[in-house]
Amino acid sequence: MKFRRNKGEDKLFEQWVEHGDLPPEATPQKESPEEVPTGKGKNKRLSPLVYILVGAGVIIWCICLVLLLMQSC
Image (cartoon, rainbow, N blue to C red; front, side):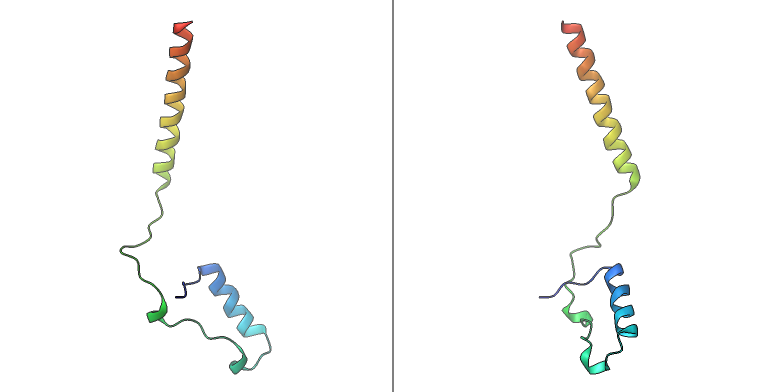
């Protein structure tokens, strides 16, 4: 089973084929759509807001931990 290339590799492949001075028979063909595995859903990237909220939560947790440790001493 072959996996789909990412965008950057697709662009490099196209440039290689275009500027490679090779006959069309010598260049490997891209995979057909039926060879590309399909996922159960779209591969969505997480929103930057999620990373900001997780980071803020970790910082708040650390501040609470420090305050708790300072009060106990």
